[in-house]
Length: 601
Ligand code: ADP
Ligand code: MG
Image 1 (cartoon, rainbow, N blue to C red):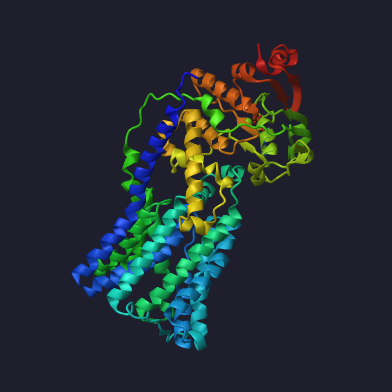
Image 2: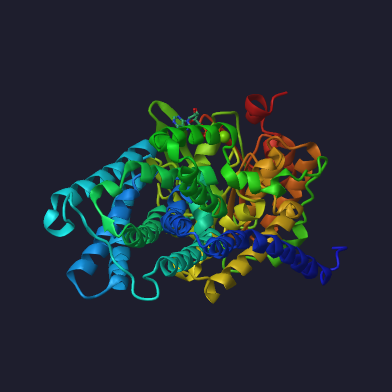
């Protein structure tokens, strides 16, 4: 109120400008590395180093795509050498059997790589961790077996000559520059995707899958897209690999090579592009310095991996993240500014109630909810209280689709909310927080909030890969909205900080900011005041109150009776999954049974 509104946008702009400066520097760093390589190696005039530089560039073309699968999506895809072999053979066969030339061969390798990338990747939707890892490994084995057996096409154990690129890329330095240029292009695409809603959604699925579902992020579609993309890059890398080898046989595609790709990402650090790039260069160059140790390479990889896991779990990227070591103010207090909510959203459409009718849900013999009716009106705060185990969280799970009741229905007005479909809720304007905050610790506070706006994104994967205007526009808008949400909950000064450095109470407000990005018609809060100080609870109450004033219907599960009685319009008391009482705060406070069962003396 006392604030001067015209000042605020400029503060916003200043902050946005500060953020773009650092993120520009961060995003430029991989290109600085590649640029330095491009200039340095030809200067040495040493052809041998040229070959190693070319090899590093080719490996990186594969790893840059694989990084999205392993580093961002967190999938243990260890058999990517299979896609490399597939690309190598495809390009070589096209060149040997047709007059289409090396570029057509590379294109074919990209297409085939994409198709098989999806085939290899799809099990990730059902299989977890090691089971998925084994299927990718199985694929790699099959490819080399087929290459051996199908001698009519592949030359079997004798092999076949690799493709030769047309002039001026046929000489060693010409080929070197071609590979580096392509590597730079791949780096650019991967950085763009990493910085877009696709990169954030992948990390959300990796670290907080349940929250990602509640935000409406569609895993199957995203995974298929990413596997297509990384498969295409792996196929193209294979074609270039064949050109570099000039002659390929099945034993060129060893398991060691696959391990190298995978470990380069772990050594580099997940969720980073620069780290895995440095990791790839390191692992390509390392054997050259340790030539006498070639026989030990598998052993060395194992030692390196162990050292990283134990000493530096965040990889090279963590080592290079200087801002993470900058101290945060210790005695910082959260000061929400609910007055800015009016810039965020306002529900003017005809209000409909969120209605639960006759909900019954039992887990085996436990009746978690036993015939519950509940009405939440827009623009009100509805308190849900009761002893531990009385079914409050389960009620939230029913509304948000994580739990399917055996009986009863949930609807907004006349439109039913399908049971067991958590991903559909974000689109219907139902947002929630969790009893234990589900926050991506490795992502910045701002990125966490921006994840909340994933369903508003319209720009396609390729539009984002090429940083086309629609994607950039959406990102800028999303960033501004996320900063606004952070200002509303009072976390704007921590926007760039890694979320795992926040205090517990700050995580609760962060979850609310993320939920606000959905401009929710209904907001479900599961014990948001747990772990907060009395002063913070008071501020939280004012914030929730203001959110409801903007038209949102809030369902508030809480143990702090003061907060409930202060800000709720209506209160429902649960006991053993049943409604014990319902009414205004004053009625509940005076209710005999509630006092004896729950509120105590
Ligand atoms: P509240 O949030 O009110 O403390 P919950 O809704 O978490 O309670 O739990 C209600 C009851 O259902 C408890 O008895 C709990 O043990 C049981 N319950 C909750 N979730 C499950 C589950 N996934 N499997 C089995 N029992 C569960
Ligand atoms: Mg609970």
